[in-house]
Length: 109
Image 1: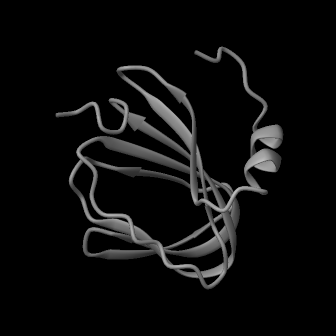
Image 2: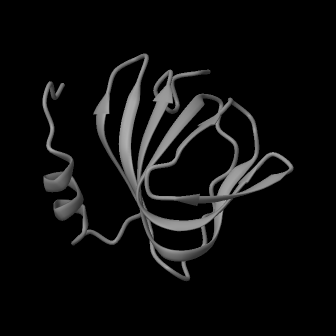
């Protein structure tokens, strides 16, 4: 398991890969990754079985959180409890989001 990562290097590496989410740390109790959403892309995620925290590194959009619609931008921190519907919509600026799942995504079964 990685003990030290450089987010700038990870973001640069995955910039060349055609995928939205890149996990870079995983233990039984925690997973961490970078989620990229470009202007015009659709965020199709569905509720997770795990609690989730987002930190918006870059970008601007709206965020559906349950029945609320929030304006989010760089520097914002979001908590989403397990099973709550959520997704990014109306992406105005390319998004780079640091994501934490607890327990690790897929380990809460």
